[in-house]
Amino acid sequence: MDDRLTFMDATAQAELVRSGEASPGELVEEGIARVEATNGALNAVIHERFEAARHEAKAASDGPFTGVPILLKDLGAPMAGEPIHYGLRVAKEAGYRAPRTAYLVEKLQQAGFVVLGRTNCPELGTTITTEPLAYGPSHNPWELDHTTGGSSGGSAAAVAAGMVPVAHANDGGGSIRIPASNCGLVGLKPSRGRVSPGPEPGEASWAGSTIDHVVTRTVRDSARVLDVLAGEMPGDLFVAPPPARPFADEVGAAPGTLRIGLLDHPPFSGFVGHKETREAVQGAAALLEQLGHKLEESHPAAIGDDDFQRHFIVLVATAIVSDLDHWSELLGRTIDPSEMEPDNAIFHALGSSIPGATYLEAVLWFENWRRRVASWWAEDGFDLLVTPVLAQPPARLGELSEPGVGQERVIETLQYTAQFNVSGQPAISLPLHWTTDGLPVGVQLVAAYGREDLLLRVAVQLEEAAGWVDRHPPFHA
Image 1 (cartoon, rainbow, N blue to C red):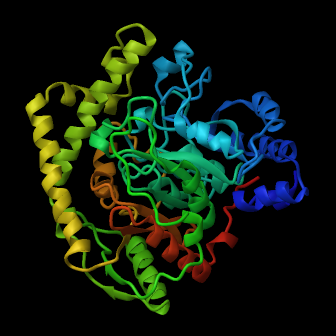
Image 2 (image 1 turned 30 degrees about the horizontal axis):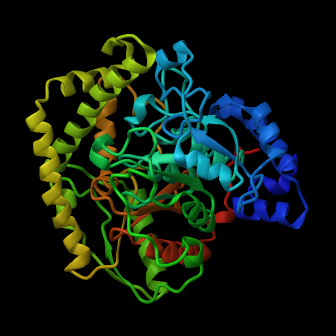
């Protein structure tokens, strides 16, 4: 393998092709070699399509990422004729394959990316650790007995270990930002409606809280891939306001002096933060002050409203009922809830007991709640909010999936991310802290709706100040 490519970002790899220093086929072969060298220990890639990738590299589209290898998460982003199982044992056993290709996959291929395979994820993407019974746990390359996070955990492990420079991810309650935090990566969740979920039905999923993008090692890759994926497609229910200029142009642009709120402890009552996550936020605040920004201990009070968690569980539980009905239709038989993992079966039972009026009550409650959250930016005059991504460093495998107690630990850990799925705001996880044991801890920045441009400008400032691109996990290709 060419060691130069292991931690070279997608932008730099694409430049090798443009300059003639490498061919698309060579980049793809190197990516395949890195997957083969590391996946046995990490279990990040669960569906390989190496021969198809070799063929596609010969005819890769001429775009900003010609020949650059990429991986797709096994949840969302279907490719016609290719396996996709959403972490479900029943889908795996049936050998299910997608009937059509998602718009975002078409856009990635048009940009020149070559898909090497699919990455591991928890069943239906409903938890923050990647340990599905269907495919087994993914392992964190910073410490193999720790979780990668979820639900885009396989993608994050693959990028962190150097298999590929960028991998598809999606986020309904933190599933881009959490794996990025646990694996030392950049994870940008775009604004609602920025990336089309079509043509598969999906915009109503979790009441519009889900969104697709990628996990990367550099901010510039995140910006450039967002330029590829962003944009309205026919029939989209949610459409974010178009940016004033390409997101790539925000990389290196001066953000000016910003007013930034700081939250370093869990906003929900009854929970206690972790020393390492507080230190991560305080360290980020110190960097931001050095960069000339104004920091205040302030946050939208609504993100700590204890009713939020109750209503969010309504969204998730009813979605699982809908998901199981959908997969029953796809597989041509009625799937019994007992065929799901125990925690999802419990969610299904809860969702089946929730009347339609209760679901609509939750949706309407969130409408008023979103206005309360947005007012902190619009009326109180803040530009950004800084928080931890999670309430603790990466857990050991098994801690968040242990029957009977795992879900309580998930709720205790999941304090800062789901709120901004429901609000629709863009948020980014940046690898700004490492524990004394060498585990990464991400810091979250949140902007007003539609302001990915501001997040990217500040993220580049922090990237240059912190120098995380030179830190690599002990286990890598």
